[in-house]
Image (cartoon, rainbow, N blue to C red):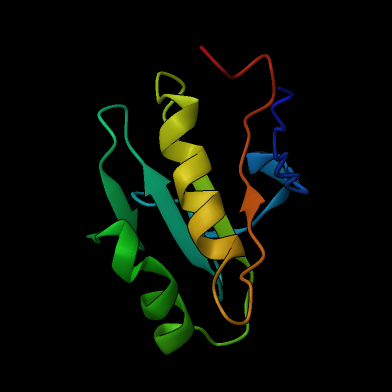
Length: 109
């Protein structure tokens, strides 16, 4: 008996943090955009406000001004937590495109 495995492909766009203008140094939210933050312990925030993963897509669609949606995660965050957010937004109707924020190698610790 053969088993089959489904593969989910996610396209990622990774701008450097230094390449985007920020409006709030506390949240690092790029001007005119939505910022999703996933903490080390799996906490989820939308523009600095705690949110449930089940409510995330609806909140983004409700408050979006057609700007980009960025995702930032603590370096110790498990990939499962990040992938759960990406899957949730990819399955939204319409799907929500997300850009991951990274730091230049010399600034990352």
